[in-house]
Length: 159
Image (cartoon, rainbow, N blue to C red; front, top):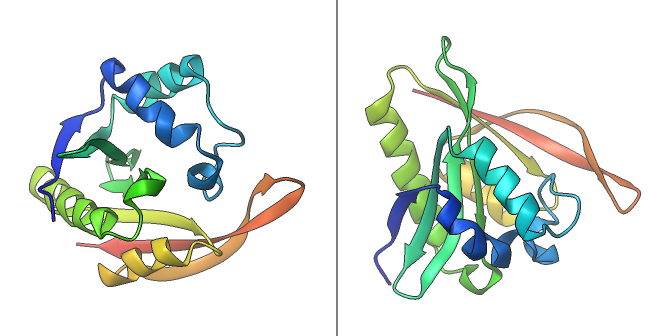
């Protein structure tokens, strides 16, 4: 398996993210309502780059994005998200990247609590969270997709 590399999110990654955030299969489990344009990607980058968000690449180039936006800095609470190119699904990359990210965050911050929410149909993503010991805390109605309210499972992991 290829070694993964992590780079802080930067404006120069916009074209690479186009292949991720404009793919309907990738975004169907996210709150991104429709495929993003390059301008919308640049707007997202401006918001996300101030957090602990990283581009994930291997020998084939950029394969994903992963990060921990701050929820409450004083309480040490951070969200966890990951999105990968469809061509990289099922190869363990999201699990490896999540392992790297959780270690990075634990080393950078003390007493970290992570939160993640997952569309209930996203079995692979829930499997990753459970692998790392995230605990299910609740279910709620989430965003709407094609007129259907998506059910969301909320998870928490404390260190």
